[in-house]
Image (cartoon, rainbow, N blue to C red):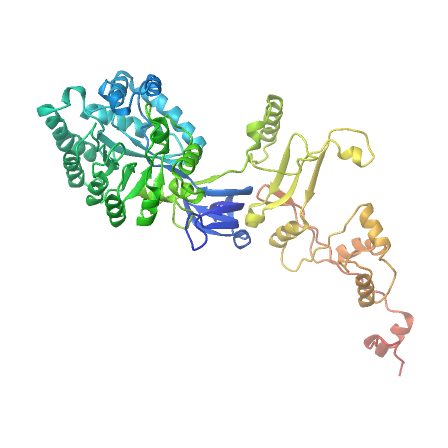
Length: 591
């Protein structure tokens, strides 16, 4: 038995196929066990599988959980004033040289307590999770000394411990130069501290999954980045690089030489860098939020990346100064409108390719057997839109179920008869039928009594699936116990009235009923219904006691579905041969 079965959905597996770049799988179901996807297939194929929890998504589209592969989520303070400076014409470089930019966030972050950093970062994390992010990379880089960088990495890991999200941490000590280490011996000492002190300490503590650096005229030179990368490799950590954002420093080629997981930004990437990245398998991570906030004019060469065969990922780059973005859908939209990606590329950019940029393509990013069950569904949750009166009413319903000791589960995605049920709807489910476990469904139905000719009064209505009940009975009844279902109600009586001629021969009776359009020639007529107690009396054994099937108890009906044998006529009793022989053309003669 699986842990979970997700049904009634359409799946974008993100396993690209010719003519199907999103790996679309309509009318699908997903089996999950032990936190892993065990099977993806057609809904009809998986319908017979049993699971502890069955979720019907109401025809929703399901994608892999979104992956935000480039963020700076843990920081203190804001840099809202820099927006006004940019509107006044100041460039990113001018703001940084004036003491703003990364340096101002470093000061605010060091001034914030650990609790403040965690609380603020957790709120940002929740916003990204609300947009469907299930995996998020968080960089350090606002400490710029060993103790402060480790503090940020610990804070990043702490906020993910109590959240249903995967946190991937990256050491970005080579993000900016401290004010006292802009040049000369102090600069050399800081780069040496990163390579010889920070990286070994972080690697030993297991606090980071990779090492990043910022290769730019206002940050670190290619030679300094190479020292950082050499130390990372020596300590068993893969590398990533902020490259070619403001100018071409040949950072993409440098990243490719070290088999970097990704090179990010890339507005000034050239053909040589693209070819090097393709050969090394380095992912291009585009950051449209920063491009938009900085009002840049030079776009990343998307067509160059396509032609070279470089995988393209996109990310929020959430940070206080140049990309204060917490909406993954907005980021994907920006990638399309600003950079010219098509929708398929944008979705792949925050799923399969983003997973590759984190070195996690073996675990997340697609919906296929063996991958982690990180999935996102867009089915609406109606409980989110209840008014206070409805919430109070539903709470009383749950309290009543608890008092009565009725096993139950709340399904916020259940949709059943919203045109006539009011207040509450329910399903009665058996765990013995797998994906077809719903045996009965109904709800509060205040108009039901009035429809049937009675007064307007609160009521409850429900319907049961005959086939499902029969499946349950088949599982519960002892062998050789036939079952008859007797339809009741005005419609059933009218149906029988037109069908039930007293024809002695059973075969002829059935043929006549078929000729008159009766779907089931075994309907029990009013005359024959009077004989049911006799039929039940002839059954071997007694009706079993109620048996439990999950949350459903059913008393089995065990009378035989057949017409009682007629008593032979006097002529037949007098002539044994006549009793033995019968011909449809007429009564036989006695010899």
